Image (cartoon, rainbow, N blue to C red; front, top):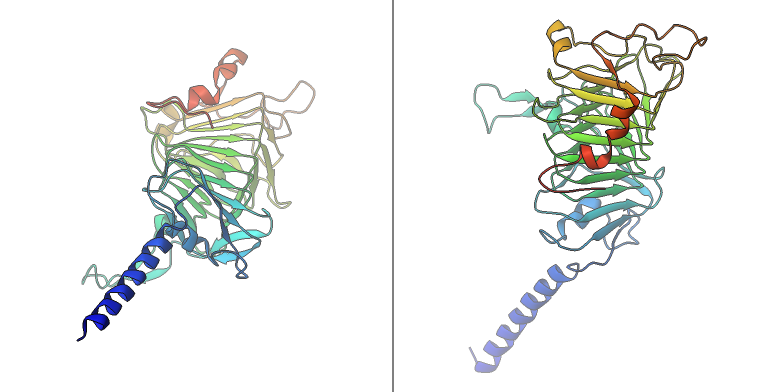
Length: 343
């Protein structure tokens, strides 16, 4: 082999490696990444854009998703932070998938005893957020599986996660706030589902959201740990339902010390007089932390004098906060932890 040929080969390899290295670094900056299903962006899928984000970024990076339907099952891993996924149009920018808990999958590589297992609730997500300091804004996240079992649209395990102006759509188990002591802020969102469609152990504040029931069932199933002061707080939210829906509970305790508060909310007539259910376990009545304050509408309690007694039958083990108690409950208090966070 001649010296000139050897140098040419080495130069070609160097150029190839340099190009590859430069390509991997080309998105390592604070600029916006554009995703477009029609090919007019830098990527055609959201997953590809997530892949090029650098681990543990100390700057804010936006993944701008143009209008379109993206059938993807996504994970934002725990080594990513400071990422915002921003939709162009909340109604027309949709991330969707259709897994549900009763799908069978091949387990032969894991076990010779049972070669097929059901998928289970916690693998059904459309989008799973493991990273912290993540923002989802102006986008629809949907699980459009048929009503054949639990089917999570948004699964959150990261801390300091913000979900703003989004549509979260599913049936049973739409939103799973899946890690104790993690803090999640929902603002100006539309969330719909059938049974337990907001559930989990995290601390979450819902501000000015529409909570829409698609069936007679339960809205929340908090599993707040005993040593965590706050679970779910709904403030200035609207509780609505499909026309045929007439009996919906505010919540039932997935774990004994479930914490849920509705304050300054508008409750539709679909909210049943009892308000809360003990998940067929009277012992939960001794520990569940269920509160209301200053709510209005036909499903609220207590009703103003002369407005009827249809909601006078709240369960005795729920609690009405005083004005002083309610005024003390602020995001700063609820999200107080080892680190300070005000979304």
